[in-house]
Length: 157
Image (cartoon, rainbow, N blue to C red):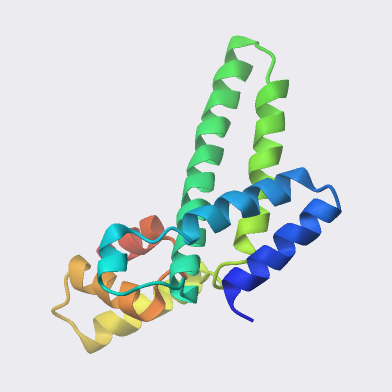
């Protein structure tokens, strides 16, 4: 079963179970993933590939993680000021749930140790490699399976 078909089946199931958050997340994800740009259409692309769906999931995961970071900062600011952080806590919980939903559709993420091992192995085989070459290798070989910030930091180190 194609990933897009699985998303649609899970979206329908979530609607039947009245799981509004999951249904909404999947609806948005499906909508974004199924958009075919004018450039793609000109090249003859008419179907959505699993690669495009995975890339869309990765984009959503990245944005949700950024949202969580911003909410954590906002919560800390409110706590320091003695404000009520209950609404921020609710938003954090919703974002964490959204992240869990999205993560179940993306590729398995490499741990930091696995990422470090891959980078060190590449550096050993290519001692002249700069950060750009390392990142290019990671993107072609392990696209969507690692955190870009962590990879960049490890590549520089």
